[in-house]
Image (cartoon, rainbow, N blue to C red; front, side, top):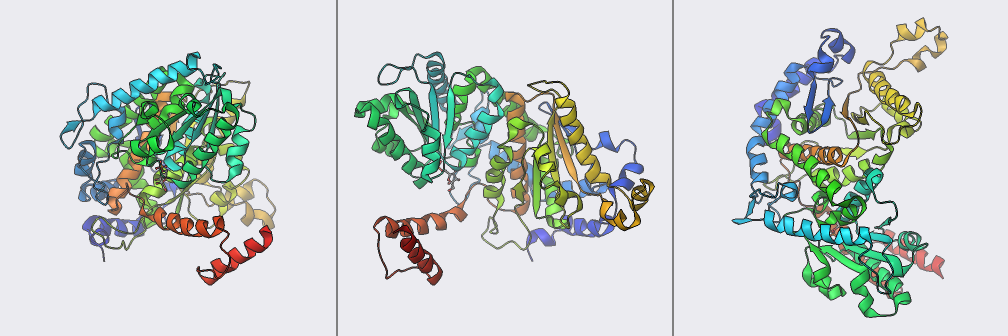
Length: 540
Ligand code: F6P
């Protein structure tokens, strides 16, 4: 048995779970008319209503005890202070330094990293302005109109999510495309209607060795040079975002056109590093700095607010409560804002690559559930697709609803209808509909069971006045820190990702066979051999 599950805090929660597992949200609300406001928090322009969770004051107190027992306070300090908490890679974890104030002092190995952070931000701003104002010209003297970000994982999901999220604020005479998949269709479709003379590629890769990105980068160079017919054109049409100057130079991009970052920024935490270059070009430096301020406001809240009022701490603990005590394997994130189309996909990497682990910091195996399966898509569309299962299915799926009071694109009654839906959904999930209520509606007896909603399905609602760069920053930082809290409780390293390595190595091996048309005898397992043989046969 692990230290976690045998700890008094955990055992107390297990005992408490047996006491309240049958308690219905209807009872909890009936017994406390102030519940809707009492279980709420405000921070960094975000309002969190967590009253529709299956918790009492005792639950929260016990969960806070668990956080305390895990040493969360010191772990937060260690992260913000640049200690090497990514122990398997011996790295500091300082994405928070990327959005610290210009006069902050954050040290890694005794050196203040903030001047370097701002040197890169200033270089990005200068470049972004040149593109936005048309001062940066392509090889043939034409203005750059298209920006294609090539990257994958954290070098793609942050940029594409944030670009879509802040589309309202973007410069509309520029076209942005995001290529990530090694499937050539991605590159071909993204560039089909673009002209190389007017196209800038941002090759975005922390390591600059990622197979998918490097393959797309090679194809992008070939695509450009097929028209521009001059190697020197690369300097006008390619820039790099990376930590690896050697590989950038090897690829043929002058390191003066490289926007650097550091090994203390994890890929999935890199949205506010130079990885945000495409976003800065899209929304401009002023809006980009508003985004950073939103991140910073949430960082400050996380670092300083007492745990009982700390939004990421509360969200993280609620996630633990459902995952570990109610056995809820997944968690849905449901934004009621069309601009947040990619938000759940972004959170999938952030959360699942961080906490999808079963080895503790000291190398033993967890005997408890860890990372939740994160999924979702914009709300109203989901209502007509998968909400049925959340409402009446056999699985418990806690949800986060995200909504904004003002629409960026007001149109007639649209926004009232949108918000009516988000409020109604959390209400329906929490309170359901009893058989008595269904009968009172005059439903035929044989249909009553079908029309009953058990309710007692937990959800959080996160609201802000408006989707702005600031509120997006606060929202992303909220989830980053929530993931951190959970990683601390589960005692895993949220900042490495060894689990993606094996597939990469095996793919390289198989790729050699495919590229070299190496015919049998095959050296894989019998299933892979059969798949390869069939593929060769069909490809002929
Ligand atoms: O393979 C996983 C991963 O390492 C992610 O963590 C990372 O965001 C992605 O690949 C891309 O890596 P890079 O930015 O080095 O190309």
